[in-house]
Length: 123
Image (cartoon, rainbow, N blue to C red; front, side, top):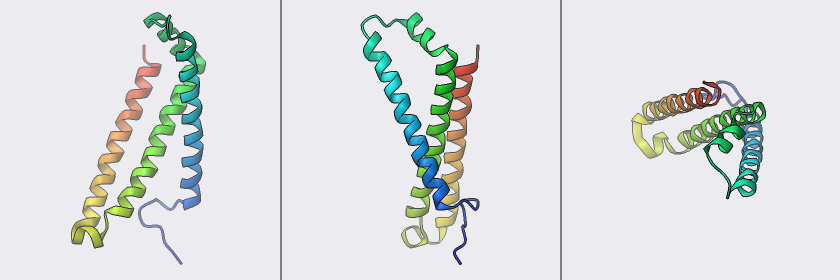
């Protein structure tokens, strides 16, 4: 029986599904913002841009995009760290390096999450 060591007991299927769903959300967000820029590009000023992002739809959609970036990034960084920071490649300190990398990644991603939500929903 294979035991999950550092992914908190989730299956690879759950990670795969989160990656795909977050990727679709990010693609949709890119297309919506890109279309808005194409349509309003020549007349775009701060008031127009601010008005677009102050709508409830865009605040909720932007929040979903931020959550998608964070979850997508976490799974990707976790996968890279477990694939490349190994005992074979790094020697005896691989576990410490991997956990330090994962902790630093978690702090940065959490900071981005809080900061993004504060920007979107703050006054």
